[in-house]
Image (cartoon, rainbow, N blue to C red; front, top):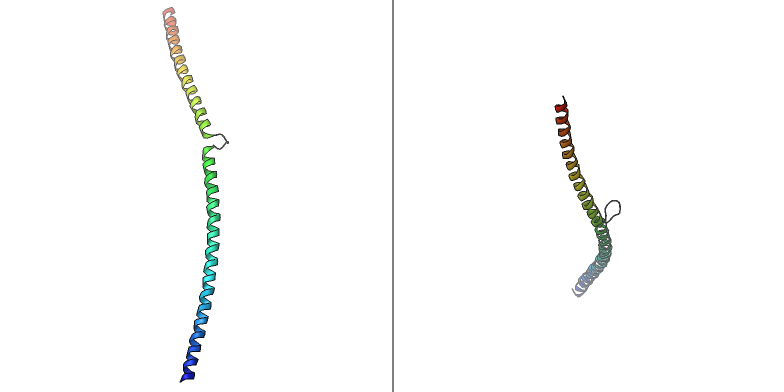
Length: 111
């Protein structure tokens, strides 16, 4: 009986040693995977930060490389210039209409 108990205890001990070894291997694998994932995450965060900065810079510039604020100012100036030109053209049209009316009256009076 004693030999049998020793044999069972030895088998249980051996089984526990094997389980312990498997658990250690699994723990090492998981730790390596975690370290690798952490490293990849740091690299991805760095890349994301870099891309976000590029996006901020890109949004600050237009397609031709000009700063958007400068373009906005330039467009505002061009818009104001166009508006003033439009007003002048309307005045010119009004003036020409008046001249045509005067010319038509003068022509009607001569006929």
